[in-house]
Length: 182
Image 1 (cartoon, rainbow, N blue to C red):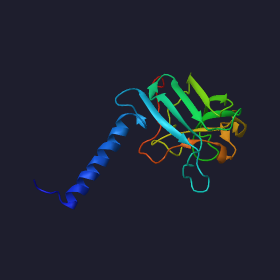
Image 2: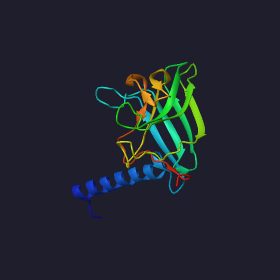
Image 3: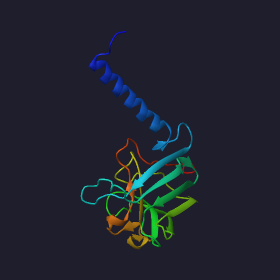
Image 4: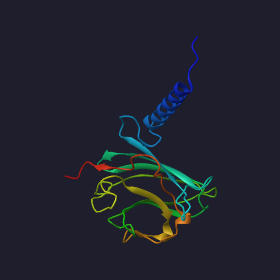
């Protein structure tokens, strides 16, 4: 039996790694779940000086329909400040996020710091909106302290140590097609 060369083993290892990454993406861990109308995205607590994910920090996962007349979603967050009101928002760059931005849902964490939000909201816009600096690539969905969010103006104050941000280390991003907009 012929022995494999080091270069053959390296190529095999790289191909195996790429297949594993493709399998994770295809399962819908990030982005669209196969050919379905459902997508998933993770939000993480980040260090506001480096924007690296805080190891062992708070996190959440949003599941949403990528197309439809309403933005249908389920969000579960963990490791947050207990008994605190949070808002799930569409943050549209640039600062302060009201280009146009939108409140998706609000709720209070339980005594363990977990939150469950779900709903079907009429956004009357696609994500990202054309006025968002991230258009047409992706929309930012954040979980922020409700006390830092002004729903009347769709703008946020800055207290990023208490928030969850989209995971930007993976290709693609959150998009939503509002099917009842002409």
